[in-house]
Length: 269
Image 1 (cartoon, rainbow, N blue to C red):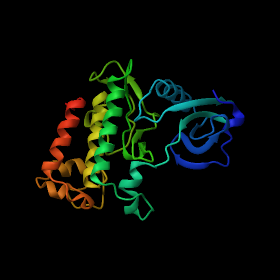
Image 2 (tube, rainbow, N blue to C red):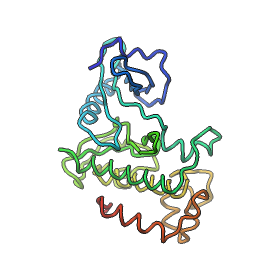
Image 3 (cartoon, rainbow, N blue to C red):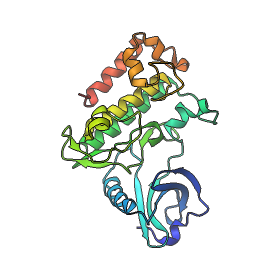
């Protein structure tokens, strides 16, 4: 647990904001390292519950493809803090989509890196579901919650919505559906059923983004093309799906990679 004096965040750079929290970049003196500090609103009852749940889950995870929790702080005046290791490469969202919005994003990722990212995310999800004492469901797998290190190793972050399930593939009902539209599995979005398959569906959407360069929901697209998953299911021409910067991709080059991934992880359905 870190002391209050260590976590003065007033002048730290804001990395992102959520409904109940804000993430800053800062430094912890005795660790001599840059960290990402997640600050939750102490006045909100929901924040306290979310803080305790995320603390318990994140502190139990140890995997090279998951951003590690390095400490926490509970302060009656400043709020609730979770301190994570800082990942310098930015989010996968930045590399895939920000350049399209006129924002200075990262360079386009070559196929070899996209494959590395896909495998790394799959390894992280497999660990969450089967590598710990209890099955952990992230519930918000998406490019903005996947950070890339300096050598483009993917690391899953933000366990604010994560929860435990009784066992892999055994669904339970969730009263409130939370997550990001476009990545929500049909059984979760429509019926509130949560299981490890919730993450696998979202992972599948991220894979489609890696291949196509498109976002899961794009209202500006033509009829039938607004939803990435629906569009891909209706698309019979493989060349139409592939992002222009990796057009050299062929079915022959993809199949060996798909078979490799298939052997190392569980399948959806």
